Amino acid sequence: DTPRANNEALSKVYELAAKYDLPVLVHSNITSKRERNPLYLAEIEEPLTLHPDTRFIWAHAGTSAEIHRHQTQMPFLLPELTRLLAKYPNLYID
Image (cartoon, rainbow, N blue to C red; front, side, top):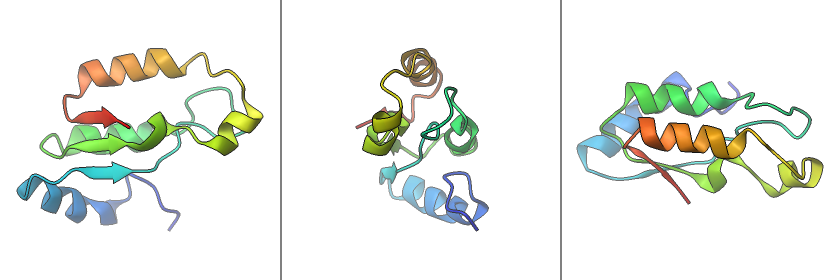
């Protein structure tokens, strides 16, 4: 399978992290280098919803150097991050 934050196989990892109060650092892009919308937002939002006792640290707020090379502006990023941080107390951004 393609590695995704909402892959079913990661559920056990998220459950174990919650049990021992360990944070999970997730590298999951919010979009691709070609899309100008939050294409992969559901991939991070699903585990946030399903695992409310797990602390997630979303690496680089779902961005990367590669995305920034192709997209100098992502107008959706700040509104989406603001919404997610308000909705999910288990979400942190590095």
